[in-house]
Image (cartoon, rainbow, N blue to C red; front, side, top):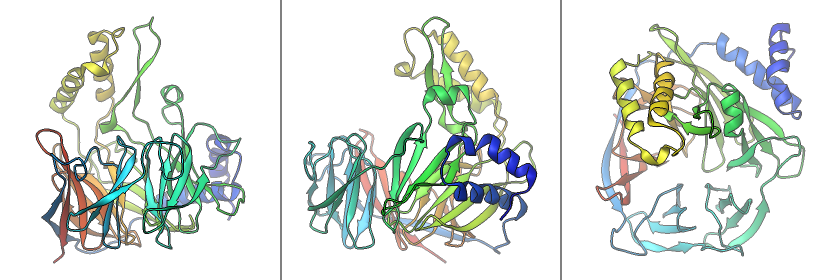
Length: 409
C-alpha cells in the first residue's frame, strides 16, 4: 500500500530515522496510524456489567516457604499457580487452592539460576520461559521445573536504548521494547520508542509497533548539581504495551490526550502471535478534567517523599517543578497505566471514570467493548476466562494473592 505524500513525509522525518530496519513494518505502522484516525469504533450495543467475587487467598505472613515477597508476574499453568519473586531471584509454585508446591530457581548464574527475575510466560508446548534482565538470557523450564534450554536476548547494532523483553510470541520470536534513556526523554518528551520482533529462525528483526506520546519524565536541577529525573506516572500520555502470557498476541494502546470536554477517542491495536495486525479500533471516552484541588494534593504528596528529593535540590525548586508539571495538563489520560492482555485473547483496560474513580473495560478478541468491571482491592496480575488473580497488601505491606471469580449476567 502506497502512503499518501503528507503521511509519507511525516513518517520519514519522525519515525523511520529511529530504526533503519523493517521498512515493511514501518509502512504498516504509518498506514495503521491513518486507519485509526479514519475508522471509528463500531457500535457494540449495551455493554455487560461483570462482577468479581473474592474467594481463595494465598500467602503466609509467618511462613518462609509459602510467604510471598514482592509479586512480579503471575501465571496459571494447568493446576498450578506460578509466581515470580524478584527480590528472592526465584519463583514460587502453588496449587490453585493455595498449597505450596515448591520453588524454581535460586541466586546464581548457572542453569536454573537467576541474577534477576524479569517477565515470564508460556510457550505452545507448555514450557515456561523466564527472562533474566541482568544476564540477558531467557531460560525455558519443563512441567517439572527443570531447565531444558537457554537463549540469549537478541539485539541489533542499529538499535539504540535499553532493550526490555516484553514477551515471547507463539512462533518463538522475542518481543523487545527499546526504551530511550531518561536524559533523551527529558530533551525530547515525544521521542518514539520501537517495539521490535526478533524471529526465532535468525531472520532480520522487524519493528512491529511504536511507543509514542508524551512521556512521564521531568528534569530536576538547581542549576549547579546537574540534572536529576523524576517520574510522574499519573499524567503520562505515553502508549502502553501488554503481551499475552501465552504468546498468542499483544496490544498497543495509544493514549491520546483530550483537548476539550467533548467526547474523544483513543486507539487500540491488536496483534496476533506472529506480530501481524489483527484489529484496529478507536474507542470513545468522556474526558475527565483535572480539578485544581487534585493538583495541589498530588504536589503535597510528592513533596512528602523525602527519598525522592536529592539533597542538592531545594524543596522550593522541587515544588515549583511539580506545580508546572501538573499545571500543564487539563485532562487525565483516558487509560491508566495498567493494561492487561488476558489469556483467552481479551484485553482489559483500566479507565478513569472520575477524579477518584476507575473501572476496567474489557475488549473481546476482535477489539470490541463487551463489559465493564469494578476494580478489586489490589492489582490484577493474571486474567483467565473464569477468574482473575490479584495481589493485595495488608497493613504491614505483606503481599497476598487472591482469586476473584468472574460473574457474568
